[in-house]
Amino acid sequence: MDTGTVDAGVWKSAPGKGRKTPKGRQVSDTAITEVQLLLGDRPRERHLLIEFLHLIQDRYGHLSLAHMAALAEELRLSQTEVYEVATFYAHFDVVHEDETPPPALTIRVCDSLACELAGADALNEALQDGLDPAEVRVLRAPCMGRCDTAPVLEIGHNHIDYATNDKVDAAIAAGDTHPHITDYQQLDAYRADGGYVQLESLRRDGDWEAVQELVSQSGLRGLGGAGFPSGKKWGFVRAAEGPRYLAVNGDEGEPGTFKDRYYLERTPHLFLEGMLIAAWAVEADICFIYMRDEYPVVLEILRQEIASLEAAGLITPGYIDLRRGAGAYICGEESAMIESIEGKRGLPRHRPPYVAQVGIFDRPTLVHNIETLHWIARVCREGPEILSSVEKNGRRGLRSFSVSGRVANPGVHLLPAGSTITDIIEAAGGMADGHQFKAYQPGGPSSGILPASLSDVPLDFDTLQPHGSFIGSAAVVVLSDQDRVRDAALNMLRFFEDESCGQCTPCRTGCSKAVQLMQQDVWDQTLLTDLCDVMQDASICGLGQAAPNPIRLTMKHFPDEIS
Image (cartoon, rainbow, N blue to C red; front, side, top):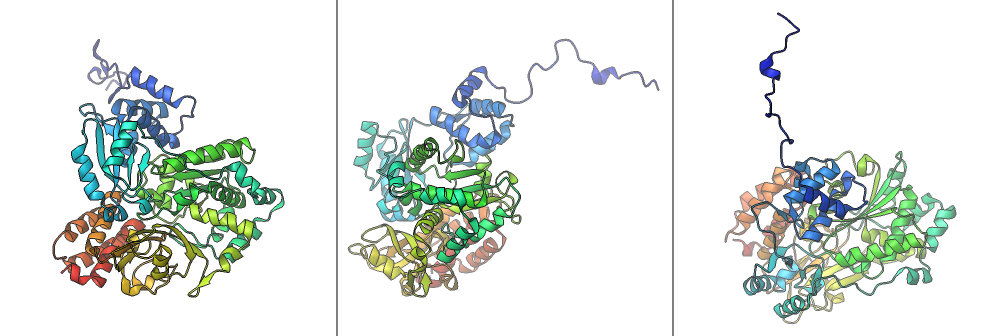
């Protein structure tokens, strides 16, 4: 065999037959120019993918395949990866070549439990029938965090509280599709009231362990739902080798929850100072704030006040990195949130390792909730007694209850941690006219539904577990004798079905199957119980593990409605 001879049949390329372009979708010159103009001088970093998708969506009203191919080229990513991320999030509209882009105006009607009780279904149908679909797109949407003003819809980026057809018509006629910034405490007013004095003092000569002890003495626990002792996290993160990060979970997507929005639209600097104190304690290199896209007012307030902090020299430019969610409830789970901050699909991670050791960019990461940081600032300014001195039913501290449903005065009510549903209804002005108390959701859909007979149970950490529930985010929805609990439970499971990330079969298929079974006149309780067991035991994260709670508690406490 002559080893110096090359098989011409393998290597020969006939004249004019060579490939002139790479395989796959080609990047058009027009699209790449448009994307480059949108991105400007922003760094072409992979973790900014979702931010860049927002830029395109906001400018063109949708994501064309051409623009996504151009963005992939700019970021040196595969087109498949960009497509997978874009299609994961509800607020991105991916349009193929053979599809018509959505109309310029989109109306999202909230279908959460509180809004459903307030007539959202009828409102949605009326809008679908009354508006030209070529001009206005009407969609059902998960909770918008405005349950106290139900029913709610978002027209463009303008939320309409106590929504009606007439209000929608007026907004369309006036072109009123932009967020309305609330009257809030700005930086100068906050500093005049003693704001940031504590932060500056700590930065000069503070002892982080002493601050950690103050937080521990207050009894503050994570108020996003997990309930982990807040100060205890600091030591775990600080002990790890840097660089370290802090991530703020502002994706308050639990239906019925709106306390974080309430505080941020009024006193954003209490939260910001608490965040900067926590960041100082763990020597964080960057603070990431992951804020849900359903809060456009909050996003604008934070943009303005972060710029004010930079201008005042309280932080260096870029120290706070504000990230915008894109409509994915699962990103309220801390590891899914971190995946999203990195520009990926919000798929929960297997643990261990935990995010305190391996978080953003695989570095140690401290994760806190908005309200938790709000209270850290107050504890540092006013002392741990602001929480520890309050006691009720053997429980210490304060809780911000988001209260909605069949009460006279829905809203955020600050009450002792040991308060019962009776106390909460009383704080909310009692039951709405013509309604008698029947049942309640104590802490978001994941907590299930409890009967009025359990009205003497303190709503706090560890007090509801014996009853198959938990306090979660303290999102309380009150039901009356005019409501069917089985319908409320179905609303909750439909939400979980829509919001499952799809990563694990028990949650993805389990939620879908549960919805089918729950629509039957008579529930197959044996099959539903088996399904609940599998979901609880085998799901990767808390969504699938807790989704069965509304089913279990409905079967336990309201058997007459399902048999």
